[in-house]
Length: 356
Image (cartoon, rainbow, N blue to C red; front, side, top):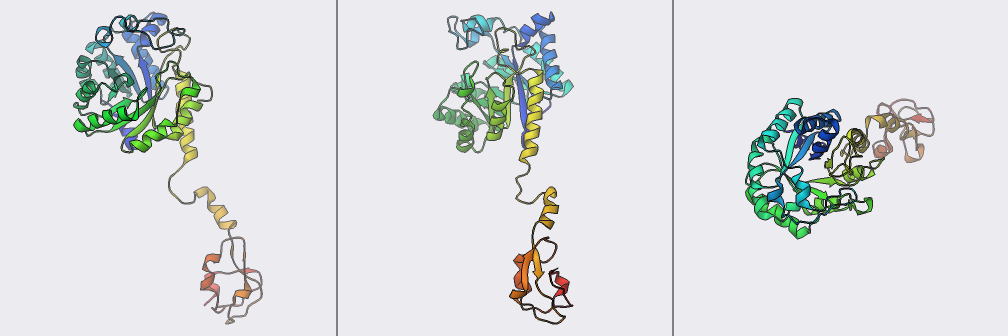
């Protein structure tokens, strides 16, 4: 299995996860192909866009929700009002199908993930992926978090709709049984999340309260043309970005209406690469591009009057002028009181071989 996520994080590199979820069912209908072929097609498009990992959702409606569980999404976008009825439409995949998808991801070099929503799927996904992703909806499900933590794989935990105390309890639970990397994903459980509700400063707070973890952002806003939400999240410290993925944002329902498509994903990758170039290095030093300015825009010690060989140099004989090719002003103490090693003309830059 390709361990792309953890390898990139070890190198302090950005990670983009495409949340395919169950959107492949609708793509299959649109393209008149099988669900498994649609899922593979979406994986291939994600890879082609430069995305680093894809994520699915593994559940059975009957183990996830009671039959009269109400909706929590925008029903003008997804009209189904029963969680059970919605999830029942998209729960046909099991181990065999996810094994095919995991194998295909390995074949084309993109990382496979799927969020487990029950014990059975948490067990059979173990051999198929390197990282466990736990949903915000299970953040207070400490028994289930404990169960997955005991698998001792890195964990990505979304923390939407939660309090600091709840997050702390979840992190403590994970650490009790697991010594691998934890990534906390800021998330707003509003589908779609309007831009004013993105609350991206929470990313800074997560970094402050949990400095030993990686910080990320799971985004449910509709993609904006300038990618301001994603770019801001990254600049605030979210090095892992997860966003729903579709091949057609006009499809009604499910997670298409707030998902990124191929072009959005390409633009996100390019934007983050551009930001990284702008941000540069953490090293406090001058850059190669500044070398000529450092040389010519700084000043040197300059003699103001003609001086004969053997004559003592006094402070009154010295000024500071550009370029900075000679003795720097910071070393004036090495010149005052010394003698000229040769005749020096007025308005000459002083060099070390001119004094003795």
